[in-house]
Image (cartoon, rainbow, N blue to C red; front, side):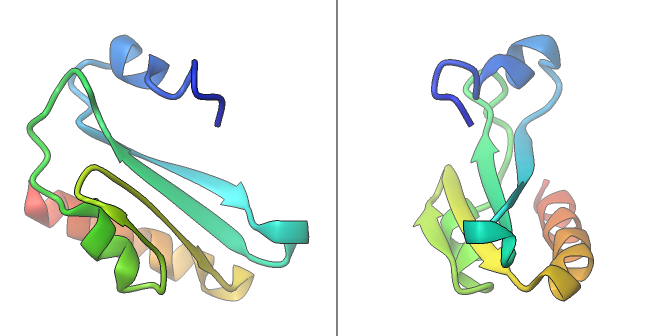
Length: 88
């Protein structure tokens, strides 16, 4: 994620209050999730760092990352989305 481009999604979609980028982990050995809150729409109530910590990741209230086994990535993505949606 390029630092100059990571907030573009929120300018393009101002109703979006949080995003998840799905990336390859180190040497494509796992899947990384980079989660961040919008700087435009600040309505998300998710504590991103705490959410990522559940998957052995970390961060802070507004951004975080976690890495999971490739075989678990679909399930974890679904769980991340469910948790974020439930938080509002």
